[in-house]
Length: 622
Image 1 (tube, rainbow, N blue to C red):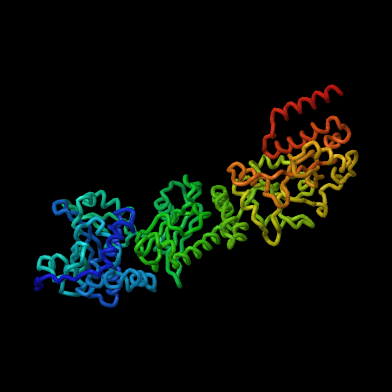
Image 2: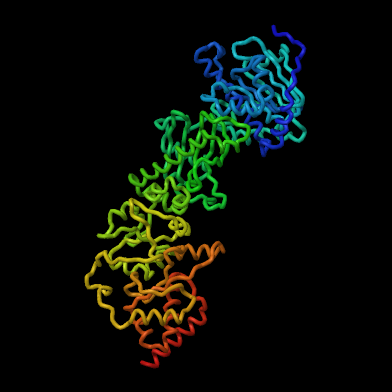
């Protein structure tokens, strides 16, 4: 028979008041979190019972599986969270509910950080328990340890201390195993007595707790309100493609099918389950400025965050779940971002995702093409940001080139022309415009493949010093280009003929005099075979496309371009022959080069007038 004894009061240490104030006002941004913490503790208690029952089956003598019950009582203005887990004896109540008081903040956090297997913390109530004081004026905890005939009651109003006593006969009869936590709610916390509100919180935060969570209404039968099914914890052999599809759509809130599924369990220094998906269509928030990921982080099937910083920003399109067995349920979920264990998980999972994308690209190119078409511009952000994985990301990338679509750099290098030592690219607004760009002419005459880069991010990542397979990437609109050692496809091509008519020094001098400060230099071109002129950037300047993008955002001053001319073109030859028209022809060379680069002439009206005058002059001569 359990007897009732007078409660014994025990004071909290001075720092507890400060910690409770921190918990209520600073640590959590929303009060809903208290229920997650209590359910998490209840789940841990059930976990520990199941663990201890392996060696001591008598602890579950009644054969009833562990479960968690939530009971709102509007008349009493209380909310109860009840588990049939391992329970606590008197000393465990003092220790577990007084962890903060006994050990202080630093040592408590140190225990969480240093815990190796987590089992010694299962069922312990730490800071998470105190989150309940955000909504409760008073908390009463009644607990019976599995296998014991003693029941104890712990109670506190969150002030100077707590009381502990043996339970009454009525309490002992009610709590046959496990722990009952009764929250005497504050007046402004009445919403937590509504069944739909409780169900909403459980669905959002604790749906995948592996033990049944039952809502016990004031009237009617108890009903389970969580799915209690963590698919990511199950072996791949037990899951079908339809299971993965449903899991993806539930986790991502999507309606398409995943283009790639990655499901595995890591064991060793870290133990965690991974279930990740690459969508087949773009999420609406893919280019949100915050660039936050959407990986859901769980710790022992307890939901922690839905935007955990686990994958780098350039993989933010990946959706899914990572469930760790080792991470602590810490004082603040934000603190997990600086946790060294999470940093190790982040590095390992990022490498695995990239490897999986590589394998998909090799073995299932059509499936990979869906991912690249949707998320290629995002992945290419990593070429600029992730120096460690730059080579892998370059190998993963697919390009539209002068030879076709979805070409890899591996394919490009395998098809290099004799004496070709660089990988050439051209940036612009559209593939069609790039294909018509005169800078391609000399490369085309030699069959040199050129990457046609049209995503805005291409102008940025190509500004880094890059190479692939020992072959540097080089822009056709920047610096000097010399294809002299690469043979022409046609030995009778026009640019093999002797230059006639135009005198290089005279022509360049006339054009420089006409254009003045509008260009930084004028020189004969190695890029052109048919067109009269083109604009390029100097060797030390930004690529022309990047300069335009930066100028649009006022991020950098523009530099004067270099005008390259084709001395074999009749228009260029006419400059030296007709000095009266030299100025107009020089401006025409500059302005048509600007138009071919997708820019407007500096003075469109003057350009139109100049062009009209030249046409009329030609008609008159005819």
